[in-house]
Length: 483
Image (spheres, rainbow, N blue to C red):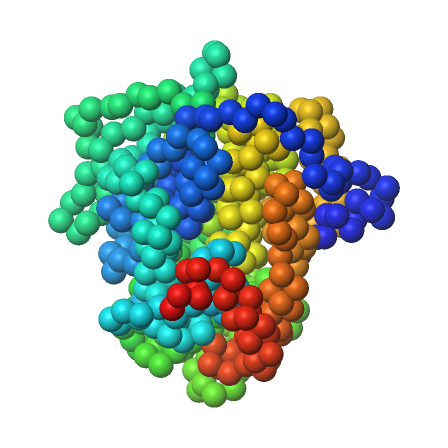
């Protein structure tokens, strides 16, 4: 579903905004900037903003850096995640999770994700989630980011003031006995004024749920993968997993050894699809669910019927910014956040409100890094944006390419293979080096390997020459060459 915007613009004779380096200004300004979130996006945003000379405060509701990479065995009391008043668990990690991208690709450009010394480090090319968290903590320590972070601080509201500045209202987070963040009504609020706000709060906490006819009368249990941790609770059960992306692929295989049966439903396959997964006696792949019955039966579009105990929705997440008040300027419609110029700036509020990490189906950390460099340079005045009118025209051109290509609105921020052109465009704007050729080649080969070896791609691969090229490239960075 990803669309190459730059190629489509060329075909339609639409300007994708001049790719040449924008003019720089002689006056470089230092701004007071609030960064919301200390996950992978917030950490690199803080580093790049400070490198550019800005004053930075990072707000983090949890007790440590890492965002969604901070694993917890705790789950939310509402398994579907629909109750707006539920205590929120920020992480969606399951215990067995390993990265689905090789570590050479995953790391920030100038802080490679190489194997580092230390107790209980994971040297595998596709490491477990704890190794990613340790890497992010290494990054924060290496660049002194933690000193900019206010831990256990919950952002309640971010609103624009009459003079164009931003008021950030926050309060200290409170935790219950299960280490869950809970609301504390008598906590005192802190109001502070900032020149700019960079939103890095992630988008893995507000579940999207599949719309299934008859589900309201179906007597079985339902949950979202956000609240999946370990397979044991599904022992001897018949489980239907809805979805075909990374979490569904992992979780169906994680629970198959203990479940009675596992049936995977996907809307991305033909209606007649019905296959048994090789190597498993109890794992089947179906087309999407047609409807559910009050007698417990679930009917698929392929005509098969299953009496299931539980339906697990591995159906993704919604963009959710409950703290952000833009007076209706920025909205979310069918999971399209907009209007955003290049997935980052709302033109009417640019450059003083920006978002990092909105695109998906990407290699996230390097993209966050390029977006952060761009934002930091624009806020200082070293890099310039087009006019508000030009940005809106560009956004409308982008929306037209989606519509002409019959891309649903919910895929607006899915950029896939065109992420490398996007990153290089950002690099050109900033005047920094773009993406190395080996990264794009490795991404393509890893994607093919994942399709060909769905069970073993994390432990078997054929791109050894690209791994060697990557490590040769890493040697120019002190963080890797000194190991």
